[in-house]
Length: 533
Image 1: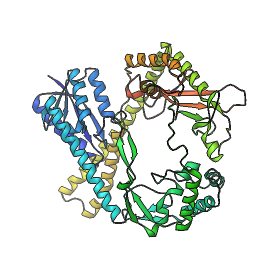
Image 2 (image 1 turned 120 degrees about the horizontal axis):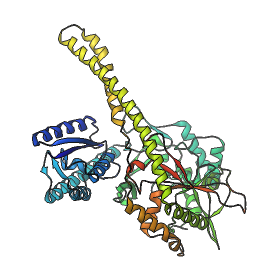
Image 3 (image 1 turned 90 degrees about the vertical axis):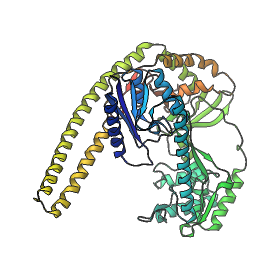
Image 4 (image 1 turned 135 degrees about the vertical axis):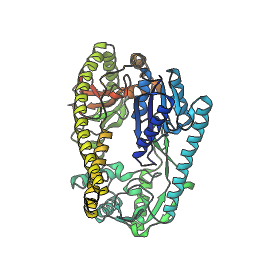
């Protein structure tokens, strides 16, 4: 008898958690009619079919196929697996190589022709849905309402979708920023003043110069937001998915695609002060640096200040190369670490330390031993938690059944039913939701030998690669470094003292996705999180 597993998915546009259960029941009936032996179920809830990334259920399915745990994948339809042509073809090709077939309740056994046909249909439906959504948002804008996004200084009006109102306390901060800037106070100094006065920043963090300056093309930043003079500008950017990572990336639209609407009730500052700030911004900013290409350094975005957690960014360059310092100290003065560090020295040392780690298999073996012990503990905790929830669910369902029985026998009043049943149903749904998010932890790690060898090869050759004049890296090398290094925390130092820092990373690039939340620290220390494994 062929071993079969079920895969179900509902996307964010459906917003119906019961859809997964309905799909599973449909697939179970199909398996019974076909004479298949069901050996497992995999699902992804509220996950888009536009990409394979960010779908743990599908990732675990592919791992199980690699371990030869089943012969057939049953799904309601091909678009449950993917609505992307390339991704559906990749899944089909990989499973076919593993000797696994895809059977759909609506579509039957998938072959190459059907994969191509369903892949095109699924992608066209997804893209058409996106166009309809955008058309709907355009209608909202033309009606003078907000189509999404939140600007500092405003809040939604309860019960009135798309309507905003001014938050007066934040509006006062906005006016203060404009007044200070027009009075020739720099954005960095303004940020320092606001931080000193303990005024919350737009996103709950510290104020800095970029919060105030923003981006002209995107309309971000206090000084560049036209909504502050009662003018709404929409469709400045569009979101596209990077096929290499599955992440959404914003791209600027042409100015001819912008949509404008008047919102005089949202005005915060006068036209005169807004234009005065704009004129000063143009006079001070100018075109400098607008078209200067930036060298792509290996550690860009990974360097962090140990004092405040802020990013370390390039501040100057001398004969020894670029120097970096804490951006929070530089932008707002809200950090005690004023030290400067040579980037090349840190890059060279990072490569040496990574080469040392990956040349010794004992380090990886030690990590796996500790992780497996940790995983077993988590699995035991999971079993205990799940047993408690299942007992509670059985109790609630029994109480609901008892009330239904009393209703059928006329032993309970309607008012009592109306008072009791909603609470029981709410409790039942809460427990089910908690059970759905309580996933088991695997005890077994499947290292990828080819990935380890490839990473070692990159490390061994990084020294030579870093010697070119721009410090640029081939795409493969930069990608591999970023897959395993998540941050480099640099500690404050006295002038002339040695650099001290920690390299933190994850082993998800050389092991299964169950390691994606596990941190390792160069030097032998291993940090295992208490949740999210």
